[in-house]
Image 1 (cartoon, one colour):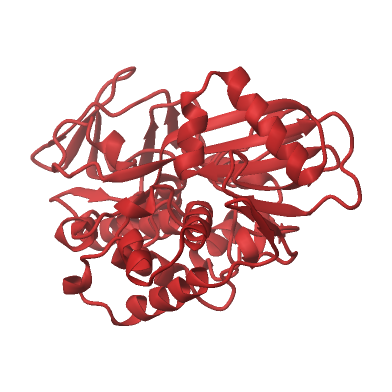
Image 2 (tube, helix red, strand yellow; image 1 turned 120 degrees about the vertical axis):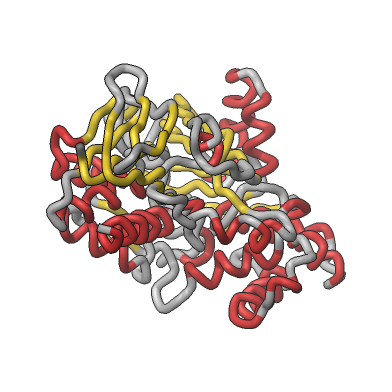
Length: 399
């Protein structure tokens, strides 16, 4: 019997297993898919590696950086950051206007998030972000700017569904000296996951989903199609809420409110010109797009534009992308490599954070819970790493 079984080989599950293994525990990891990393993935397309999942690392991400150092995953300075926090200026294209930096309601909302993150109580969780903007009298263009920026940096659900307090809690957990996505993994975030898994060796079992978790007299038993049941003293469940809902025997919890997102590599038919921007933020189907290489662009889009992309046949989606790339970068598109996420960037609606969201990480007997959703930074790699460290600490303390 193992000391612990970890369900899920995303960043959170891998970090939990890494910490347990480092402390001498006998741990095994079950992963339903054929690769490690979960929502972190760095595939190769058109001869280049690109980020199809998690990407940005803040200087303030101490847990992530510590684990990276332990497994030898090199970090490098980012050439561009997210939004207007990066080391190079970006051009905004929102609501038919082009400008250098967001202002107005975007800045006022930032001040309000700072205040709520430091002062708000559960009783204050009654407004959506859209409610607050309406009360501020923000015009349509400023509301579009806020929705665009938040979809890129924090959560990909529409602002009319997003708790202002929940966004403030997430904002506070991320903020600090060095919260501007200054770093990237030299071998991609997927390479970081691969390095953790390499240190665990054959303790990581791919193609082994968890079907059920049962308590035994001296621990837990995880039913895993594709192999026999796995017995351990304790279990760590490190999968998203929508995946957790399909594992029998776990404490029931709401699935929560996820947005949609699309990450893409745009391959151009010629090198970018010297006067093309380093990055753009748009409310179009290319969302946040940045120079990836001489002839490639990386792109992340969430919320309403991402939902539109997912509804379209590929030729229509590609044509809309090509038009936006030509308008913003003066370049012609040759090929699109697109990865879609129909559940991305969990965020709570008003009342959910304190009614059930803040308890997602509470243990249930010998079952412990990790995953970014159980942290104050849902959907961020740092949140996943923190949750993995916490769950591993619970197991080690329990003995």
